[in-house]
Image (cartoon, rainbow, N blue to C red):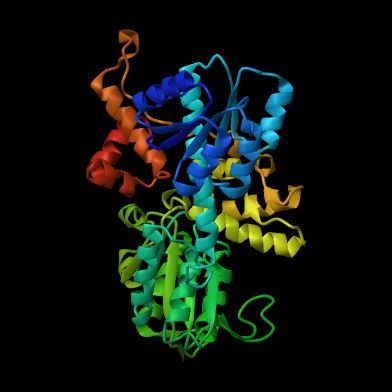
Length: 453
């Protein structure tokens, strides 16, 4: 990590030693002999970290730390001193120091502290910029994000909204597929019509049919009066079929017929009713695989998937995690009447490191919990759940020097295939594309590994 380091020490030899050490580690160092000179340099130039001694003629390093913290809070300060008492350390931290190093200096330890301070400063600056971006970016409905993948999705939504064709939204559970459907509806010519959503996995087949197509009085036990189905209720608007991949196969045939003819027959009724509805569907399943395994009708797949939009998981959206976290923080802080207004750097670091398997839904729940527990004016690392605070990203490593740990090529292939499959949440089509294998070859290998489901 490169960056500019300002070294402040009244001993020229120490300044030269530290400059050489920082330069060897690809930093760009500068030095001066007093706190007053340092303040002027910080005012006139840009530095990533200030590295200061405590005992100096004139203003001390502690006073310098206070001045930098007040005037340039984006620059972290690392304090060095031969007087390694607890009182000095506490004073430095209270003054706003990022870290505290005692003399004699261990250069590797100092370099690690500088590296961490620089990363901390960059994260702090990123949080500030993202907080500003949250109020400057134009959200698309309830969709919020500024990452490249989301900006591309926003553009796709605007173009798709102008058409009247069916749309299939794919993405992991909790990623916000219904929000995408709502955004399409609001940008379409049907915006003044109703938007009605139904979860196809939440109802048994007979109730799902009644919900979608309606029923006549006496059609089944409890049907005391006739009822319009959602296709008719959504007339002139949009019907969102969530988790369509879970729809029973018998219902798939009835749905296909309704979409083809633009008419429905209520359960127990004799007359068909016409409707004018745009259908948007969503699934977290691999429909191509479901078609191959005869769990989903191929003709229905073609009918609902005229245009496909893929919603990226939260872990693929980079700093959008912090933009969304700040949005939820402000929302819940206002709702709970708490004076929270920012996220600490430590909490932001942990949230960026976490992989968010529950996506935006999980992030929203985490922030709601954290706001409820927070005791100060910022959301801290201690307010996050243990699983996020202690999370460590796993990495797949194939290198090694110990011959006893080396394995056969076939074993390396097996491990990597399973690693890719785990990374895409078990989506075999996505894994096959990453591995550049056809699906049949992948299925054959998984079967050989004793993993068929």
